[in-house]
Amino acid sequence: MSNVSGIFQKMGERFDSDAASGVDEIFQFDIDDEMWCATIADGTCDISETEHDDPSVTLTMDEETLANVMSGELDGMQAFMEGKIKASGNMMLATQLTAIFPA
Image (cartoon, rainbow, N blue to C red; front, side, top):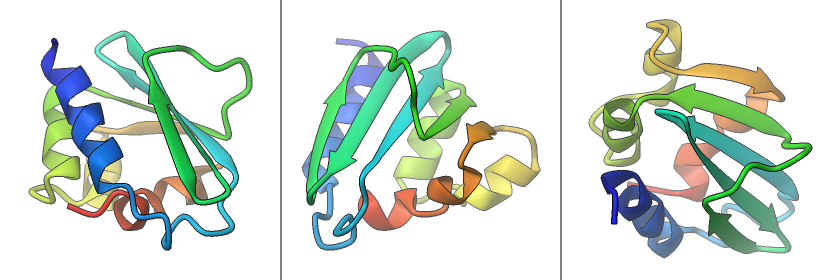
C-alpha cells in the first residue's frame, strides 16, 4: 500500500458527516500522478483510486503536501498561496476540506 492510499484511508476514517451535511460534490485529487476521487453526498463519503469524468474541484499536489495538510501541520490555504497546491473548478470547495476531514 502506498503512503498516498494510507492517507486517503485515514481521511475516510476521519470523515465528518455533520460537516458534510448538504454537500454533494466530487473532489478529485492528483497526487504525484495518482488520481483519487472523494465523492461526498447525503452525509456519506466514498474515496477511491480513480479519475472522475466531471469533478466539482480538482486539487493537484505532491504526497508530502497532502500528508502535511491532512495532518494539520500545513494550512491548506497557505499551501495554495505558496503554489504547493493547484486547484481547478470550484475552488471554494477546497476550503471545506479541513472541516469535512478534520485532523
